[in-house]
Length: 413
Image (cartoon, rainbow, N blue to C red; front, side, top):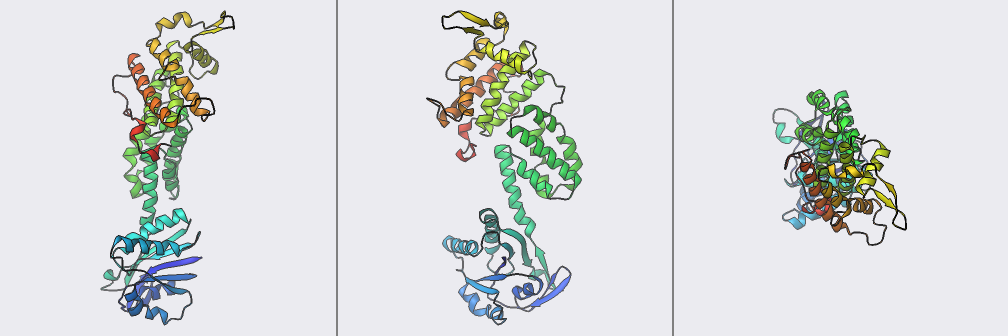
């Protein structure tokens, strides 16, 4: 159903309104809207006083589509909630809704914008317009009718921005950019979505390559950026641009960048991503030391065998397999720290990563809080090892080490 949600004050005044180049007259704005809008129902929210003094002009139209809804004056928070409830309870799921805030108390626009955002989320309404007949601008001519719908969409930008800042998920921002008919904004949306999706699906190399396109995409879209997004460009560049690496970047640069990603994930409470990348980072570190290809599955398997002890024995204790790199283990910087991180309490990186990825389907699985706690310890340990290897200096990560337990619980997803 196409519904108009409108408000009425106590006064009437013959006014001429200008809407899309045409003029419409009415003693209240609802009469003008009735001339230029098609609708199935117009709900006019009125206080008792407005019902007695002004609603009679609408009642005299004998239009069965127009219905009054009584609301309190809104003198305290309890009455404001009653108005809010009246708004949301008179709209059905999937309705097409036009809001009118021309008449009514000064608190009404605030409630309308919140109700519009709530109804879009809770009932899936399609918000067509938010109209305002600007009486005060019609002193020397017709009062212009202003469409304020873009400012309701600002709430979408706020939600998308919150997802980006708190969780590092920029897909909602990308979808908002795609609404604009601009090749440069479409290109920027694709770059942002590619980086964000790569990070969400733990594809560091894809994230590196996508991030190399970000500065050029931002520069190309600068003149077309919508105002809400323009304020985010510096934050976006700071958060994602740092992951830019060319395809031919050496292993050391990759390790430094992936360490930054580990901190980035952990600060945003993405514990599964933190543990998964931390586990792979340790193996890549050993590949770097022994000059192996960190993207080769067999060579990574050899390093996993090495850090796990480097020997395989049969039931009688006889060594049946030994890593060819075991005799060189003493040359590995921070070797004992690496083995402690991998095998010993409280870390047991390989085990806790498996515990998380197998969703706790095992005996004596760790609790969620235990996993959070050990993830923070693992990140700190990896930072220390990286410093020992000379990859970074103390505290030299772009993202500070953020402990998950310091984040709001509802952001731990």
